[in-house]
Amino acid sequence: MEHLIIPEGYHSPLTIRETEVAIKEIKDHFERALAKSLHLTRVSAPLFVKPESGLNDNLNGVERPVAFGIKEQNDSMVEIVHSLAKWKRYALKRYGFHSGEGLYTDMNAIRRDEDTDNIHSIYVDQWDWEKVISKEERNTETLEYTVRKVYAALKETESYISRRYNYIEPILPDEIFFVTSQELEDMYPTLTSKEREYTIAKDKGAVFISQIGKYLVSGEKHDGRAPDYDDWELNGDIIVYYPVLDIALELSSMGIRVDEKSLVRQLELAGCPERAELDFQKALLNHELPYTIGGGLGQSRICMFCLRKAHIGEVQSSTWPKDIVKKALENGIQLL
Image (cartoon, rainbow, N blue to C red; front, top):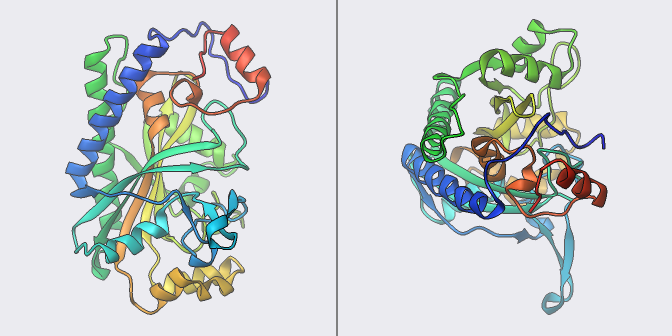
């Protein structure tokens, strides 16, 4: 049971049916707040893409996508998306969005290689968003301004749901704390990256750790990132302290996307320069795509956080090992 944390004395005040109602309230409220804050329009998004398009994300660079052949197209292969980071950038151009405008969508994905636990599932549901910016706006100031906008939507949603359900006390701090991955390593040089995240999140309540994917002075990365969507100098994660599980909980990964120079540099550093020949990457190198900022926000994680649930399976329907389901039920955790 090393993948299941059972909080001492845990009991959810909500039944399964009441939980489903609350999930809808959270999702509706946060979606409206995010769209209003960032000037976003909702669009439809694909569940699967063709491998040769280069639109699927490698995430940390090693996860295998779920793939299948399409009978009508001579069994040509398509892949279930891991996320929509690159697709969104392509869509912004195709749909005619201009600087200062953006889109968001419901992204559903299957991550077959995920190690499941209280906060990880093979089923992923998140809000994916992307916004057009100018080349001059590709800087830290734009990144931090946008992080504050996203965080304000999170904090406002927590406040709203705490008024709807009186067992919930707001815990997010008024301001989010900013730190780079290198600054964090300098602060806690003897800790692992995950231990650093926990320590800073518990101290500050909410933190944005930037510059994810690059090598640190120690020779290690804080965490992996695919080389062809985020600019590793201008990205990061929104992480909050979650007292129900006594953990650092990542709610969002976001960043300013690669331009022509950073794409080439990061493909070389990642040892996969051949990806520059894929359709999406070629379009970017040929100056055919807009400069953008974007990210993903975990829908189930935000619901889990706002409702103070002990397991992500309490707010989403997925599949879990039989022993986990049994142990969870014995301890008052009802997995959907």
